Every structure is written in structure tokens, then in C-alpha cells.
Image (cartoon, rainbow, N blue to C red; front, side, top):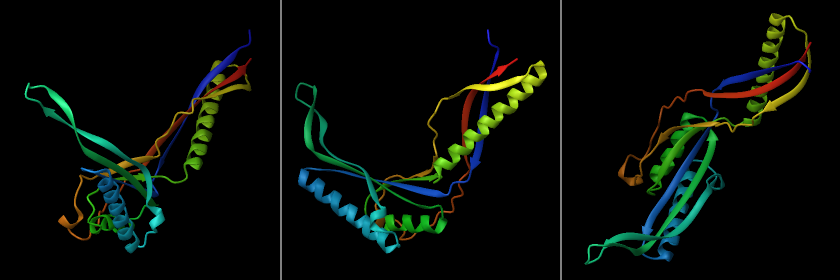
Length: 217
């Protein structure tokens, strides 16, 4: 029976975020389908106009999800039983914009939201842009770590490390962003007309693991 040595290696990295992803959510409830459509279009246009005034391209604000659904409310009948009553339509429009991680640029984006006078919820995520390069470095580190461990084990066990027979890689999905701030829904004109946030995001931590089998003799 061939003798083998099975070793796991791990690659770890901490990376400073270089990108801000701003996610916006518009939603409201109206009695008619037409009013829901018209309001969604109006608010989206107001947002794009406000971002344009802050030197963002209108095309940078993109739609992630849009839906209009029938809305029902629970109503109690004379017998004390609850039943659903149709009460109109609710739209949900989710948008995003991505730009370089810069405090001034973030302040411009938040000011655009505020001055648009649109009731909106937003989430700020810090992320890394070059995902492929990070994954490649992680795998290189993981393979190197496994090789170092294999050589040490072979030396300690007084066996000869032969050729590499197999590499197993789980391909686990990595999260390349972290949420830094989540807003409540607000109406722009109800708060100040400009905003600056001095947010210093922490480093993002990544890890990849591989398992390698070597021949030994």
C-alpha cells in the first residue's frame, strides 16, 4: 500500500478596503398601481439629479431590484375574525452606487441623498475591488503553508517527501465587504443640507484553506 501524507494549509490576509458601496432603498404604499409607478419614477429621478449635482454620473446609480406588490392589511370583522383586506400597492426599489473609498466622496453622496428630499434608507459597505487578486494570493499562501508543514512533518518523521498527488480546494464563498452603517428611513428636508462622516473602516480579514496529499517513502 502506498504511503501518503495529507496536510491542510491556510492562507490568511488582512486588506484595507478601497471601495465604498452605497445601497439605497425606496419603498412606499399607495392606493393605485399608477401612483406607485409614478412616485417610484419621480423619487428615482430626484435621486439621480441630486447625485449629478455632486459630480456623480446618473448611470452610476443602478437598480438592483424593483417590484410592485399588492398590499393587504388585517381587518377584524363583526364576528371578531381577522381577514385580509386589499389596501393598494407597495413598491420596493433598491439601488446601488460604488465609488472609491474617500471621506469627501462619501460626504458628497450622503449630501446628495439628503438634498434630494426623497424618503430613503441607505447602507454603507466598505469593500475591496480586486477580488481575483486577493483570492489568488490567499491560495498561494495556503499552498505554501501546506508545503511548509509537509516538509516539517516529513523531516520530523524521518521520511522522504515525494511528489504531490492531489489538491483539494473547497471553494468556499468569501465575503469581500463589511457593513459600516445602516440608516433609518428619513426625509431629506427634515435634516441638515450637508453631511460629512469621519468613518475609518477596519481591515477586512480573509482566509482560504487547501488540502494536499503527498507521496512519502
